[in-house]
Amino acid sequence: MRIFIFNLIAGLLIFSCTPAKALDEPSSPVFRMQNTMGMQEIQENLTEIGRNHASSVVFISTRKTVVENTVSPFDFFYGTPFGRGTPSQPREREQSGLGSGVIYKRNGNKAYIITNNHVIEGSDEVNVSIDEGESYDAIVLGADPAVDIAVLEISTEDALPTALMGDSSQIIPGEFAIAVGNPFGLKNTVTFGIVSAVGRENISNGKLSLTDFIQTDAAINPGNSGGPLLNIEGEVIGINTMIYSQSGGSIGIGFAVPVNIARSTADQIIETGKIERGYLGIHYKALEPDDMEKLGLKSIENGMLVSRIVSGSPAEKHGLATGDVIVKADGTRLTDSNDLARIVGNKKPGETLKLDVLRDRKSRSIDVILDAKTDTAGSAVKRKALIEEYGLELSQADDSLKGLYDIPSESSGLVVTTVLPQSRAAQQGIRKGDLIFKINNIKISSVEELNRIMEGNQGINYFYIKRDGNDFIVMM
Image (cartoon, rainbow, N blue to C red; front, side, top):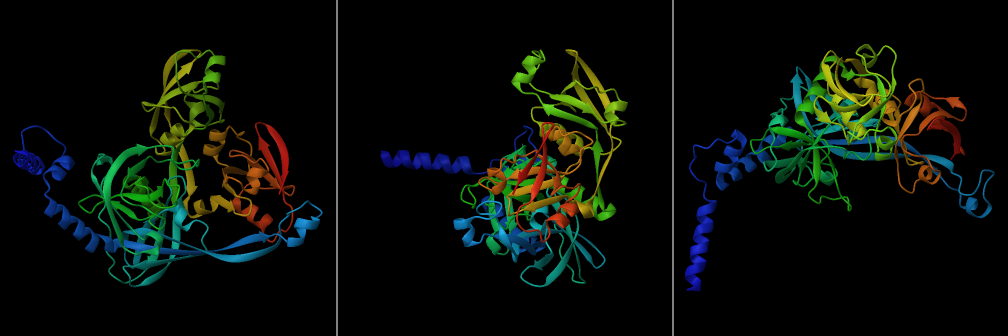
């Protein structure tokens, strides 16, 4: 009897796993394709991707020279004029990195490769290897840190295969996903999983990001960055970017920049050499419960309080006012300060931004035609700096960052975007959002000026910092 019941259950399971004939009920093309695809066809597609589509994936190696300060062992016992443990004896060392990329386009003897900005950022040399064969010196044609996309250019007469691009707007959670890249330097590694979620926001480690991410459980590890995330048809649907991990390896939570954003960014860099974004022209902050209570805003649960309007900006021209609370932008509810920056940053100059605003506790709708906010793509890579010996990452203060951290519009300098835990900067109380406007009493307004001041500088440096309208000095 038990054997009969077991055979009956097994038969039902086998029947339920057999693809059924198409019914008259409606279904999306993507779901229908995967629902009726047999195991043999899935296997053939995966093999085809590993054999042919992976040939458009490249291995990227980078090199850069970093300056480190060492501590004299005598400082521990005797100290220095500036206190114990003060860095001395600066020395240079070579730092290497690795990542992945995908061949996007060809034009004559030029080939263009999409990768992540963080793969090549700050590099002195970038080298591209293709399918275990030829190796090429690459130049960084341009990059956009706000979406973590960069474009490399190589010169070759070889007939390099280009990737088949998909449409990330059609992605549905549960679809098959294949990651291809070079994790830990293991070239042409293929991993398989599903799209776990789409539209993931605010996961970029505290950095301003103008993209929503695709989440996948296809294994992504260090070295996969910049490589493609593919669908079962071999089309690129995303550019693998980061993982959540406590160990440094994959735990099944990886993220990719949607390919539509990657393509739009790459096309602007290739065709014009610059990135154009919509520009609104306001300073604002996300309202906290205490703010809403003090302002008597009981009718809303979230919003962005406009603290300043930039003179001559689209916001001023179209009637936004200081004290307005922006509740929605293009129909999207604003719950985080990055939400508004992302919506505006992904619109083009001349497009209309529809805002739902609360003014004097009354709701109104305001349409704003955005102006151009242009970043030169070639210099975008140089708008950020990492001071490793202090554990600081700095970005040039632009309108987006000033608005995000409520920095006065007339201020110039570098904004602290990352402070590493337990670093010297963290121990000295430097915070994310601080504006560094002088070093050693010399004004700075760009990464280039910072590098000139810091180059070859020994001993203590004096950082002039602006925070919440107050100025102070930190010595490191």
